Image 1 (cartoon, rainbow, N blue to C red):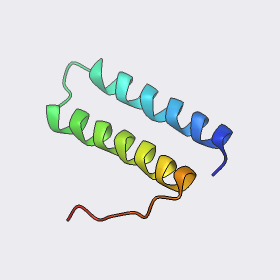
Image 2 (cartoon, rainbow, N blue to C red; image 1 turned 60 degrees about the vertical axis):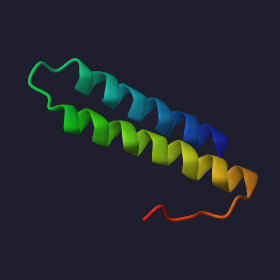
Image 3 (cartoon, helix red, strand yellow; image 1 turned 45 degrees about the vertical axis):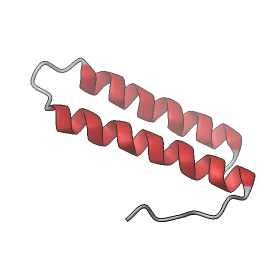
Length: 58
């Protein structure tokens, strides 16, 4: 993934999270799940960019 592709995807995910937060009937778990998805995207991109081996947290 190029840096430009990452920026586009990041912006899409941030918008999705923002939209979720503005829905009155949204569950906190859904916001947390989207937030974690955004975190994973950022971490994966940085690990690839910095050539850091990926560790499983599980």
